[in-house]
Amino acid sequence: VTIDGAAGEVFNALHVGANATATMATARPTVPPGDSPVAVTVSVTGGDATSFAKVDSAGVSVVLPVVASAKAYGADAAGNLYVEDPYVGLRRYAPDGSVTTVYPKPAGQVMNMVGALPIDDRQNAYVAAGATGADVVQVEPDGTASLLATLPQPVRGMVRASGDILYALGSSSVYRVAPDGRYSELPTGALFTPNVLTIDGKDNLYVEYFNADIDVIRPGGSRANLLRHDQGGPAFEYET
Image (cartoon, rainbow, N blue to C red; front, side):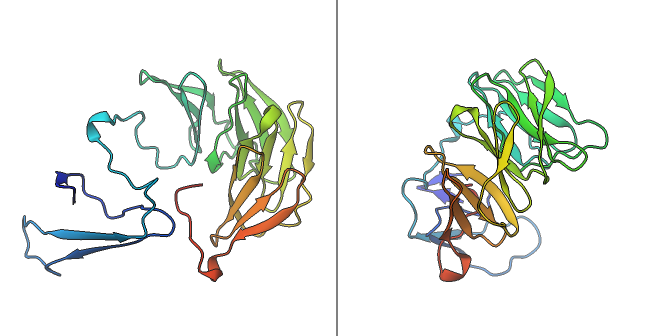
């Protein structure tokens, strides 16, 4: 694929924003066996100019190898990247390339968060573990781990709000977890098949469901639908 005459890597997907339409067309529907150049024309309409940009490969470097099983990531103030690997545990990737398993996954426990991996003001990381994945575990930078709370439901995802408050997405509820470990269930009503939890700068929570619906949850716990997949709205694949 070439963009503005610059050769790039081979891709089979092009992400250009929620409201864009893109097509890839070739002059020949079939090619004979063996090496053969094929011209591909990419057409994009309705692209979001704030997110659709060419990346200069000279300024890009690999910071960690592919961790296909990991789905929760976070970064601390020193630029360390924390990754929850459901098979290994919590791993820290330093800017110099060194890798440390700061919290090995305990035998027989479940670690399966999706989305953000919260880091608080003291640079402690938070993961979900336990026999069912319902334990909220605080991991200090030196690897010291302590149980903060055990929630009624397995934790699907967690985010950090102001005041080092944590919000945890369960299988059908959202829980507010204070720094001392006390927790309460938000009065949102039952959530049906929630997938990912995220937060904005005003502590509003956003829940994306497996059917691509998105709800907003205000700090007081009230919930409203923001986007519905069956009303022709945009679908989100990577933003959350």
